[in-house]
Length: 252
Ligand SMILES: NC(=O)c1ccc[n+]([C@@H]2O[C@H](COP(=O)([O-])OP(=O)(O)OC[C@H]3O[C@@H](n4cnc5c(N)ncnc54)[C@H](O)[C@@H]3O)[C@@H](O)[C@H]2O)c1
Image (tube, rainbow, N blue to C red; front, side, top):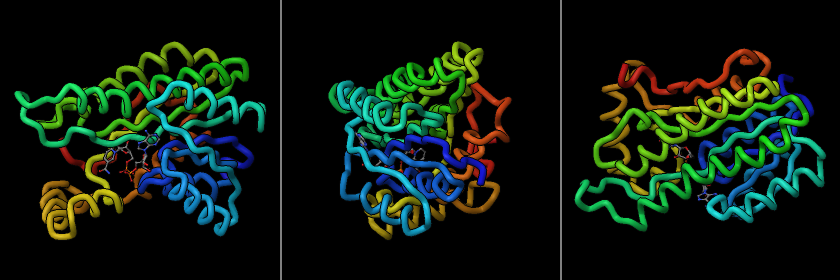
């Protein structure tokens, strides 16, 4: 087991990628704090995790609220007294497909709050716990749109911001034995995406992307989870400040 006994926070643990990560980490022996704004979905994740022989707890938190992020970390500190790994996955696009003239202040702010500010604040709390320990692994969720994406202005700006922040943090925390990296998936098949688009539109998007990606398919949530596991494991002990594109070769 690669992560035996490692105390691991996974945010967005009710979602497609977050659930896959929580299960993947638990199977490697990590004790998982599964967190999400969606308590029911997160509790399903915990059930699956326990059925698979893993262990963990559920802590509901809205990552767009600083006080909820603080109390999430306080809970972890009081219960476990340490934190080894954080995987910041909670996020999503609050302003998909807008023309530049139509950028909406509230939707733009929602994208920055949910994707970028939440990541910065979670990492701040993680660093407060990890620095005195002299150890930590932080994995942040960016997206391939960090390179830019037409009509995803505020989302791509937020995900690009995560990459810049990840690099800055890696520079500051390396001397404390903490690595900080980011994931940049292209299209990943997750239930929320399929439900939002409807089966027919999803299939058109999936097959269009699959034709364009050199590996001939879109990503599964497990593809992303396994990359997060690698970055959190000792195999990646000398890797920091990197963004890993989980893209099947898209946009080479
Ligand atoms: N699916 C993709 O194609 C894809 C590609 C690149 C990056 N991503 C990123 O991966 C991450 C996970 O997305 P997913 O595809 O699993 O989608 P998802 O919708 O299944 O998961 C997102 C999770 O975040 C949770 N969440 C939303 N708002 C929250 C809040 N305020 N506080 C706490 N939790 C909140 C949701 O409840 C949900 O469980 C996101 O950051 C997304 O931007 C997804």
